[in-house]
Length: 222
Image 1 (cartoon, helix red, strand yellow):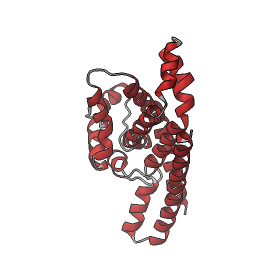
Image 2 (cartoon, one colour; image 1 turned 180 degrees about the vertical axis):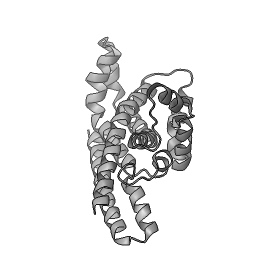
Image 3 (cartoon, one colour; image 1 turned 120 degrees about the horizontal axis):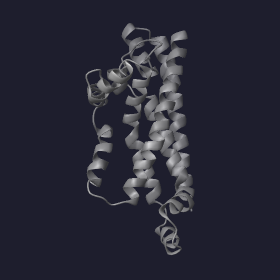
Image 4 (cartoon, helix red, strand yellow; image 1 turned 120 degrees about the vertical axis):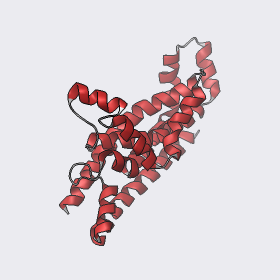
């Protein structure tokens, strides 16, 4: 049972760190895509959406190319610090964040686009700056929808398997999250502990779905 506790702790740690990055970067990208029209906008949105449609193993492989010791980012990091992200929980957090990012961007876009344009036009007539319109109009009216994206991103990061396995491996107590622990337990024929892990992960997933639905309905309410 100690392994189950370690896997749960590491999963929550990885998902929490990933969600922080996703919340900041994803909401910013969502706002950028809604607020501005610029060359390459469609390409940016397509690239951000790719992890949603690519197999997680492919995403993990691409990250491995970038973050590995011989990769563009990984080589520079290793030369500067002597440290590598591969086979670390930090690498697992990055992989989980990349996979969860499209959900955050899309929910942020949907939440911001649901705001009545009349409020935005009224703010413009009062000569409010874009930052004031964002903090005084958009965010107060759309924050529940954005928070729903944060919740969904946390759930997605918590359940990530393929990309994290490619980048961080499956090292018990070091990088073994709950999905990887489930896979290992099933492979070993330890169905009892696998069922416990499945039950815990399923309960968290159900809570995440219901909370996000509640926030989405609250955001849509007049």
